[in-house]
Length: 334
Length: 275
Image 1 (spheres, rainbow over the protein chains, first blue to last red):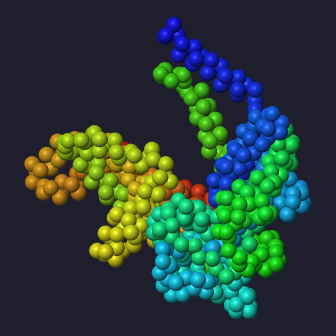
Image 2: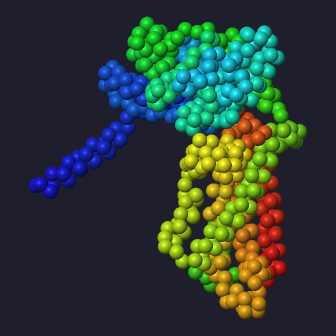
Image 3: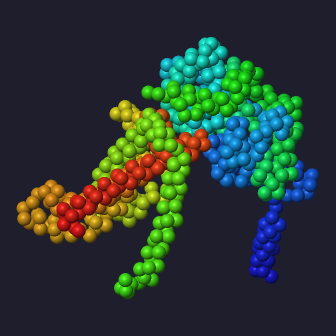
C-alpha cells in the first residue's frame, strides 16, 4: 500500500496531464517586440482569469519577443501569430502588404487608432549625470559617447533617430541642418547593436557610453533591474511619441478558430484593467484615469513630436530615412 | 560495379548521396539563385557595388583571412603539444579544444565581448599596456573568428602528427640535420596539406560567421560590419532579393576560394609525394 500510493498518484497525475492536452485548450500566440515581455507576462495572467470568469473556458497564451523587425519578418514568413503587439505601425502595414494576412485598414478597427498605450524616447545616464546631459543638443558634444541600436534593424532605434532629427529640425530650422546634426550624433556612437535590448546590455552591463537612447519603459525597467543607485533617467523637454499599435491577424485567427478570443484579448488591453497594467509596466496608458495615480506620477509632461506630424507618416519616414540610400545611409558615407 | 562491400552497394549509396545533396544543397541553392534572378543585372550590380556592401565584404574576408592564418599558427602549436608531450590533464585539454564546436556561437560572442570590452578582464589589460581596444573594433571580429576557427585547425593537424613516424626525424638528425632543418624539410611538408585543409575550414567558417561576431564587432557601417549582418539588415527591410543577392555572391566567392585552396592542397601533396 505504502509503495503503491505514490505510484498511483503518479498515474493519476499522468492521466490528468494527458487528458488536459487531449482537451486541446485554445492557445493564442502574441507576437511582440522586446521590451513588452514583462508587461504581457502580467497582462496574460490577468486576461486568462478574466476570460475564465466570463466564459468558463481555460485558455493559454504564448508570447514571442524579439527585435521588432525580426518578429515582423517571422510573421511574414509564416509564424502563426494570432495577435500582433509591435513597435511601429509600419511593421504591421508590412504584414498586411507583403503577406496579406490582415486588411490594410487594420489600424481603424480598435479604439484610439489601435494604440492601447504609447511611450517615448528618453535618456538613461550614469548616476550623477557626469556629462551634464539635459537635451538632444548635448548628445553631439565632443567626448559624449551615445549608445543606440541600428535603425535599420530596430524599431526603437528608428524612434531615437527621428526624435533627434525632429528636435534639430525645429531648433535649427531646416532638414539640411537636421541631417548634419544627426550625422554629428552618430559620430558619437561607438557600437550599433541590432536591437533595443542589445543596446541596454551594452550600456548597462558592459559599461560603454555616457548616455543610452531608449524607450521610456525600457529605461524604467533598467532602473528597476539594476537599482536606482547606478543610473538616472533624463527626460528631454521634447521627444517623439512612440506609437505601438496592436492588431488581430485575420487569416490566422480564422484558421485557428480563435477570432473571438483574439479580439477579446486586444479589447481587454483597452479596458480599465489593461490600462492599469500598462501604466504599471511603464507605458503611458491612453486612458490615464484608469491607472494608479502613483504609476502616472512617473511620466513627466513633455512636448511630443509625432511621426505623422513631423515626418508625414511611417511610409514616408521609412523611405526618406531608413531605406537603402536614405538619410541614414547618407550620413554614413565615409 | 560488382565489387562486394559492407555497404548495400554502389547504386543505392550513390542514389542516397545524390538525393541528400539535392535536398540539402542543390534545391536551397537553386531557390537562392531564383530569388536573385528577380533582380535585373543592373540592380544586382548596383547592390554589389554599393560602397557599404563592398566595405562589409572587405571586412569579412580580410578578418577571416587574418584569423585563419593566426588559427593555423596557434592550432599547430596546440596540436603539437597535445600529440608530442605527455602532461597531466591532457585528455581534458583535448576535449576542451572541441568546445567552440558545441558552444552556441552567440554564447561565445557574448563571453568574448565581456572579457575583451574596454573595462573587461583582458580588455582592460590590453588597453592599459598597449592602448589597444579589441571589442567593438575590427580586431574584435578577428579575435572571435580565431576562437571559432581554432578547433578546425587542431583537429585536422592532430591525426597527421599522430601518424607521423618519428623515425624520420631521428633519421634526419642522424644524418646531421639541425632541429630547424628537420622541422622545415621533414615535418612541415608532411603536415602542410592538413594545415591547408584546416586553414580552408577555419577561413570558410569565419567568412560566414554571424552569432559570435555581432556581439563583439561594434557593427559600425564601413568599419566593422560583416556580410552576414548586412544580409540580416536587408532581410529586416523586407529586401529579400537584395539579401539573397549578397548571399549568393558570398557563396560564389567562398566557393572559388575553397577551390583554389583545394587546388593548392593537391599541388602541395603531389610535390611532397603524398599522392
